[in-house]
Image (cartoon, rainbow, N blue to C red; front, side, top):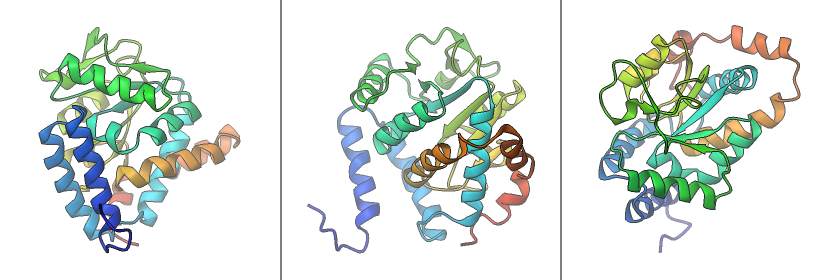
Length: 238
């Protein structure tokens, strides 16, 4: 039992969620390592959402609302950490969830889909995997034709840099949530939110509820005013 007055309470509770996800078969061991790497960068920004992150989040939500066929890519860590919020975001922006895993097994796919359904998801893809991303030979290249393959915008968290590059080359708008501003994903994505997924997704839900009533001209102005390269230069400024 972790006491709420523990100075590292939030961080420790996030770890507990991942451990429970691992024990249930949703998170793989490599996902635990990936979280630790991201956590190190989170320390550097004070474990809070920066102005640059919010700026990117606003542009990201406007983009997802403006595109005809957005898709949210979900891996084990994301499913374990923010299942309720990812489902709410999916509903708010009318985007299906697609389970996509580097360490893919049918058993893990089924468990994550069941987990998301238990949290209210009704529009979930990833099981069929009837298409593939050109140039990606590992399991994350397996996608659904009516999902990531056919999407015009894809939201990805904890992404593999090579898949991010491949998706951009396919002409898709890629929105990445990545705590490492130096990663290939962060540098390749069209919009990079340098933030912890446990803050970024709830922020996106709130902004989607606000921006969905904005007219298209105003949303386009938000998108056009965003410069990913410039925004990344101030990633650590509070």
